[in-house]
Length: 104
Image (tube, rainbow, N blue to C red; front, top):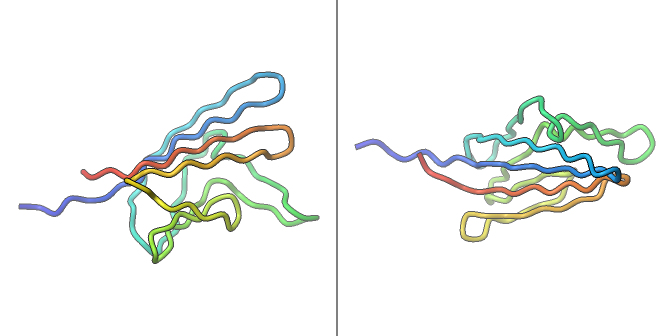
């Protein structure tokens, strides 16, 4: 008998003011205390300028030791019943991210 492996499925949708919609999905290992890299697809591939010359790449997220997901530069999301939902407005663009924990 083999142990089941936990995976985190991430689904992202961005909508610009002109109505353009971009969608991307990724599945990564869910291992506490790690950083994972998302595919080079928009909106994951978006770089965000925060303050002055400080930038943030949306291609990485951290899975903290306590199981929370750190994304959008120090915003933390806790999985409830294996799911978490995030919404952010970056400039005039709205980004929605859904996280789902699965086992394989």
